[in-house]
Length: 459
Image (cartoon, rainbow, N blue to C red):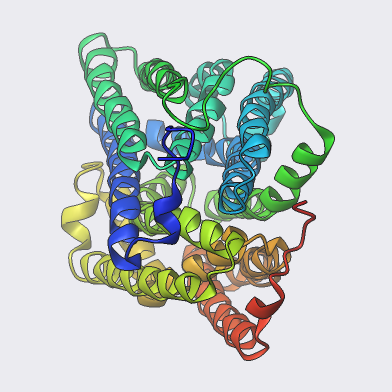
């Protein structure tokens, strides 16, 4: 409780680090895992009831969804990090205005993105790798998703805010509720109503709408020190600037991911055809599930690291970093084991098409070779973002995507075909891990904590 009698997240600066991380990470991991399971089931429904080309069409939409997620991540991650730092500084007035600006920015940016995407939907999808066989699937799905883009942005942004405000369980409930409703609608719309890929899109938007309503109710709770109310939604130049300054790192990550998926889709289309793109959609769903678990761990780490960094309790910042790295490494080692030794069982969930299964297994066994160490790289990148050091986080994300992966994707497939696409991802992961380790070692060797320096003006 704050001195006003309202709840505040001061436990972040006092409670045991291991217990705190578990308290914040477990709900986030469950949320991420539930969302990943939804993606898997979504693709399984399409593969079993519509066909392999539907999976390929859905895979074509990955870049535009990553592009949308880039703007959402910039606002959500940037805003929640700034919010946690302000809470650590006990600047509750600014924290409340940050909350209002997060909502306003999501609405404005979500609307602008939707309008532009709808105007140029056909050329965008062709550029992202669509063919005459897959365009109809991709376009049908994306138009429905784009119409609900504001809701998508608000759902992700408000979920991040709830975690920062000390309500990880409520954030988890919102995600689980949305996933369960989504799966129910998937079954009804795809299997019973035979709406095909449009049914998957409608299920997604309807479930997110219900989740947003629940999140809004949670954030309007007047018993919380920081909550939604009139007078906090006017966008302030300094707050918006700081949100974008911190959020530029996840934005760059998502933008690079968009470019990478475009190159992957185009490389697979050239050397393997539409089924190869569908195979990538399957592989991405499986590997992404484990990455999402790691992201859940980093989401649990973020408010703890940000709060204690703002409060200048640096030993606690280091403790939560070490714990997050350990848990992430365990998760990604499990990913390697399952995908490397049991790929047939996993891929068989999605399709019965023998060629798609062959291509997916081929890709999966190559992509996961560096998995045991990938969790370390993800945690380190998010750690620098959590303490406001956006430049380091940006460099880590850009080095993997632009410096390593993009050149490899432009070169290796020309000599190795589809195997070159898979190998590019693995090699880039290995190089990015080396860079992350070097940067973290130099960060501690130089004693950067002593300066309490970030890349932005938090005053």
